[in-house]
Image (cartoon, rainbow, N blue to C red; front, side):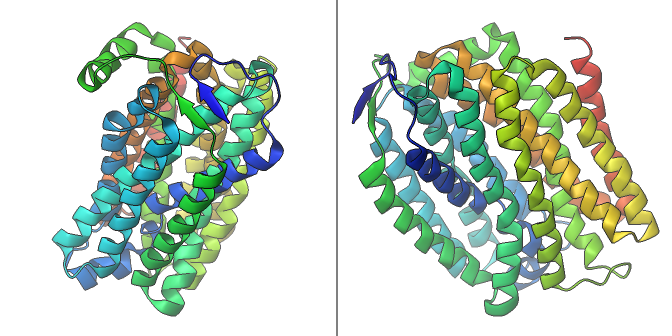
Length: 393
């Protein structure tokens, strides 16, 4: 099946294809998070100090932002299937580099490239939105995002379990094998989509600024999600340090189980898609932001009173808020036009992943100098500030 940028879908996106898209998104996005619970294992082996350990996560997210700005907009210019498969091939090579890295410089460079290659996930989602009719677009995107967000949440426990039994390098090797299998599947199942836009590459990239300048709803939705994602990355980068410390003394396997419990928050994505299709995106946004802020108040109590239950509940609520809001944002910006959909998606994701990079970047330093109290206070501040901005809508 070949789609042009202006073609109209006359039937719903097949459920089997929705499942393939959701699975692909989960496998791809997991590469950004495999290292998150492993920084205490990776850093000493490659020669990184404790205060610099969170660079492992931060550089992956910075690479993702670079890919979003420089590669994802190509979805409005070149044939999408070939673009996706070439990008996945780059991710495979980067994962092999990470697996074999002999020192910090090599591993951090590989982490940057893993982030760039993982942007293939944001080339898939606009195709799904294009295939789906408008009245079901939120539901389709929500179902696919549930796969993506399960990948985000399951990456941590999976990498923890694998590292516990086989070492952290095996995590990156197994991911490379998964991506090779995924590339074969997508080559056979992905529809071709040839955009009709006739721009040079540099003109395409230059147009990102005008889209950002002239689309206030894009800026607003991206800032909401940037704040939530900063708190999300802060929480999940710092929580292994708390759980492995003297207060809880959890093993790598215990930390993996904690992360697995947090994956329950993925149920919010398809629900958010249905809510958006019914026209209730605005109140749902306020609920998502408030949920994220409340999660950190709960985590503050859990971290200071040694309540593992409160920390688990805080992780679930935070994930629900983040996942709900990202679907609401994508549903909103996908209504703005098929011919700019890849670029809008690139800007939306790049802005909120900058927030994620900030959150993960300050996590280990905040925990080192202020403990969990400082981490939770900063984490509360991000969604609380976004909620105040939301009140001006």
